[in-house]
Length: 58
Image (cartoon, rainbow, N blue to C red; front, top):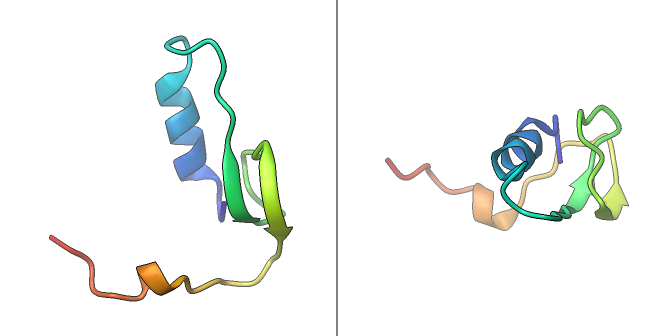
């Protein structure tokens, strides 16, 4: 979770639709607007994941 905005969007989408939802992320940033339920590591550094280095698909 970098800024946490995408995670907040997903949680808002499911609010009122499901009884319970939990979130999990590989890395969280201290400035994130959402605190995930499960986190592997915390960092304030930029992370380049192998699956996000290619050109975007239009």
